[in-house]
Image (tube, rainbow, N blue to C red; front, side):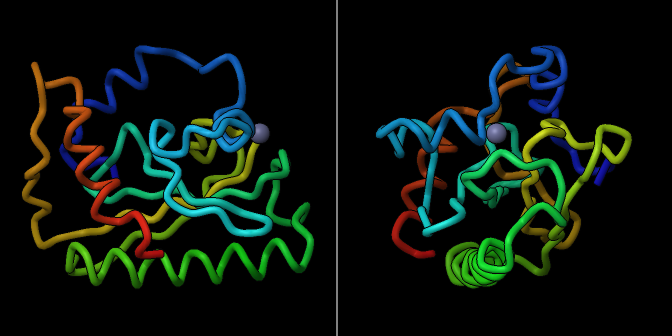
Length: 157
Ligand SMILES: [Zn+2]
């Protein structure tokens, strides 16, 4: 995925590690729209990546703070993949991507930004990945662009 042009990722890298765990903290709050939480299942939830590789970059995570796939219960795992499937459908309907990268980075050496809380990335892909997400000063995704993506996908999963 390194070759995707996503300069706002630099800000994420520069910011350093967040202190808490966003996958624990965000669903604890009630501000789903502010936190870009798109869908809440029984065991897992979906949120927009604020530092996306591509528009519509989603993350699916269990509510439980576990590091590894093998720590998930059958119920959590089943629902996780069901939600991945539903999210993929929603993205296809909404953004008509040419394909997807769906992946889980486990452990820091595998590239996990937040290594302690297992999460699945869903990145829609387009031919050549022409980037149509507006950026400010080459580093930040316009919050409006994220909000627009959120509004398009809300209720679709
Ligand atoms: Zn966590």
